Image (cartoon, rainbow, N blue to C red):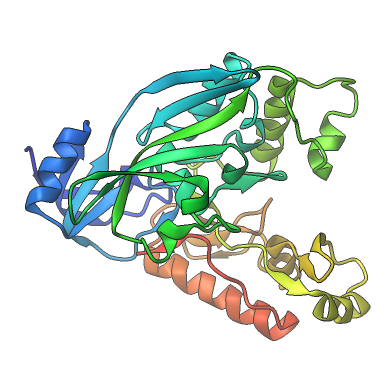
Length: 333
């Protein structure tokens, strides 16, 4: 095993935070991964680095998971089962599926990160979540070194949540994910407002059309991590009960919302943050993006602690103004 010493993780996290890994190794196969965990249980697993904020140096062995490969397993009538290794870039995987006319992931185009971390967060966008096409995953149990298969019902998927963020956190390493996609007669979702408007001139949009729409919308609102450090949406959109929402709507008639159920209303966190005056504001090298208040950014050399302090300031201000607690979506490390 080629373990390196004192490696900067700046290029391994989309925020571009410059912290050091005391020890670092890149893993390219499940066998290599098994060898590592047989010797060291206390590791820090690093995938695409897209959903984390590093606030200090990492003293554990940092294991960069670089498992690659995509396999079409089987087809049943209109369904195709596709397995991607954990180290595959998520957006590139989505585009690969679309190129073969495999439908179901098009609304999730341009989300940063790798395939292996997508189920942990149950990533979602524009009316679609991972759980909608998820079939199963394989994960390595750190304690035993054995591979275990998790079906959808095993994962306890919720809004930006799964069993891997809760009771199984730190106990398994996801090595591949299998999706059940459609080959034709795709069950597309274009009901999200921005997509509906973008595709208004297309009578029967294809999954490629939907993907292009999502890419265009995201590029217009969200900064490219290669140009300015960020981790996409930093906060979850809060969900409140109908009674609380009605009180808010009386005070703020123009408040945007999405009805989840008869008694649950989702409020865009970006709107709340913008109303509090944070949109486009800069605090040293940490800031809130000018086009999307939900995104915190590293303009150059901000530390993770500085960005986290900004996040806490936003949480406190939103709570004082609206009485709504904002939950951080990004993992603070």
